[in-house]
Image (cartoon, rainbow, N blue to C red; front, side, top):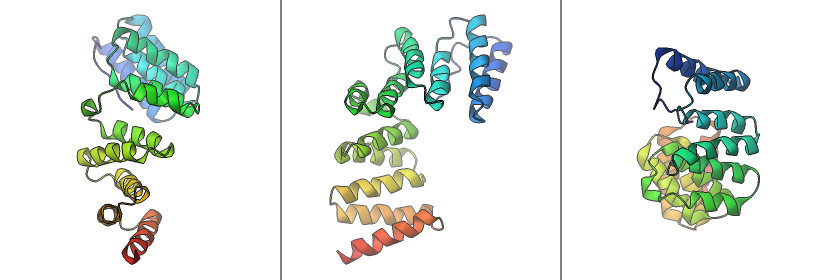
Length: 198
C-alpha cells in the first residue's frame, strides 16, 4: 500500500498520518478512516490522503467508495499511477476485467517501478488468461525485487502457460533458492519433476 507524505506540513498532521497508517496496517479500517478524515479537516490541501481513504474502503471491499476517493486524487494529479492502478483494481474486483484493463492501459509500462504494483497488475492479467502481459509484469517485478517468492512463482506459472518449458524450469529452480521449505516449495518441486520429464 503506497503511503504519501507529500504536502504534510505540521507535526500534528504527520502524527495523525502515522497513527492512521498504523491503524490501517492492523486492519482497523474505521479507526484509520477517522484519522485520515481528521487530516483532511485540518489540512484540505493534503489530497493524497484520499488514496489512503480509498485503500481503507478497498480493504473493506467497498469498491464504489474506494474508487470515488481514488478519483479525487486523480482530479488533482491525473498522472498519479498508483491511483490509476487502484481504480483498475476496483473494476477488477467487481469482475469488470475490460474496464480494469482500460485503466491499467493508461499507464506506460516503463514508468511502473514498484514491484508490488507490478505483481498485482500481473495477477489481474494472469487471472484473465493474458499470460504474455502477465509475464512482462512478473519479470519486471522479479528484476526489481529478486527475492520475492510470489513474483518468481507467478513468473514460473506464466512461462508454464506459455509452454516456455526451459524458462519455467529456471524460474522454479530460482524459487527454491528463495523459499526451499514451505508447502508451496513442495508444489514447485513437483512442477520441476514434471518439466524435467517433458
